[in-house]
Structures are given as structure tokens and as C-alpha cells.
Length: 236
Image 1 (tube, rainbow, N blue to C red):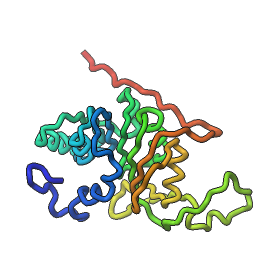
Image 2: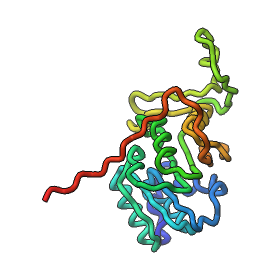
Image 3: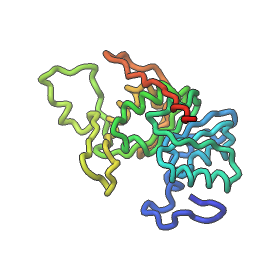
Image 4: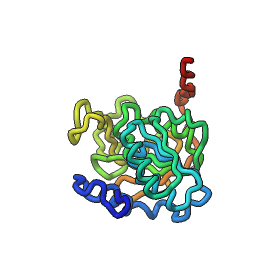
């Protein structure tokens, strides 16, 4: 990220990150965000929060579970003279925000979660009123096979199909990062978004999706509703 003309991480192993990534999907985001309420989940150092405010968003809230990232994000907003709210919350705690947003950003978080589908369910349930800008690391074949409504118990062929939805569990480390837990293939990621109630409107060639809140498919068991618990009052 560049702040005041200074590159803050000139030796990042991914290069000029996340700017080069942003340049590949910025066309999915409206150039004029005036009147929009934006939630940036897993905001890290605030790059996308800053970009949304620069595009005129009325309200931008960034949340992250790491206080170090939040400190960096607040500094970036301060240097840019931008009014952005930052809160220390995880995606599992989005219900505590008590409001919905018409543009939710959920980038680079899903594969770091122990419970990725629950996270999508909670976003749908508590904060996503309209659009979802989503990204996840993907591995495996890019091909997406048609999926039937049901399969016979003895039909194992779909599980040998590289284009069948799948989510790979990483028991130890991937890329020297112990927080990389689950990595979907493209078919699996798109199926998870649909299962959570999001309709895919557009996508880039790699990993970014622009989705719209749709109707959840019929489920035998509805996603759990996580109670919103206010933090206890401090002792006198």
C-alpha cells in the first residue's frame, strides 16, 4: 500500500500487493459509491476500505480480528484524511454490528477459517443486504462440471470428476501458514456461495466474484442462528 507517496511494503513477496490484485477486478466495483454502506470483513491494513471511501461511500466499516492490522488501517485512514470506522471483530461476530450493508467485501479470508460455510451463512444472515465482493484462494481444475440435484448412493463417479465441487482440508501448513485450513476448487467455491444464498453476477478469470444476495435454497436443516451477545459491562 502507498501512503503519502511511500510504499509501505516494497519487498512484499507478492510484489505491489494488493494494488496489482485490485487492478484486476476494480471494474467490478462501481466507480461512484455515493450513498453506499460498505462493510470490509478481514480488512487487514485497510486497503479496500480506503478505496471504497475514495469512491464516495457514505459509510465504511472495516473489521478484523488482529489489532495490529487495525492499527495500520487506522493510520492509513488518518493519513488519507478519510472517515472510516474500524472494529476488532471476527467474521463470526458480524451480528454484533447490528446493521446491514449494501456492499460487503469478503476478500482473502475464507481459506483461513475453520468454519468457512458458517461464515458465509452469518454474512447472509446478519450483514449482506445486497452486494458481496468475494475472493478466495482456489486450487485444482478450473473446469466446473454440471451438478445434479441428487446422486445414487453407489454412484461414486462424481467424486472422481475434477470439476465436481470440493473443499480440501489442510491439516498442517500450506505456504508456511498454519491458518490456511480449507482451499476450494472453482466448482466448490461457486457451489458454497450459491448454498449460502448468494447469486454470482460477475467474476474475474482468477478468484474474485461479485455476488448479489438471492434466495437461499431449501435446506433440510437451516443454518444456525448465532445469538448476538453484548459484551459484559465492566465491573464498578
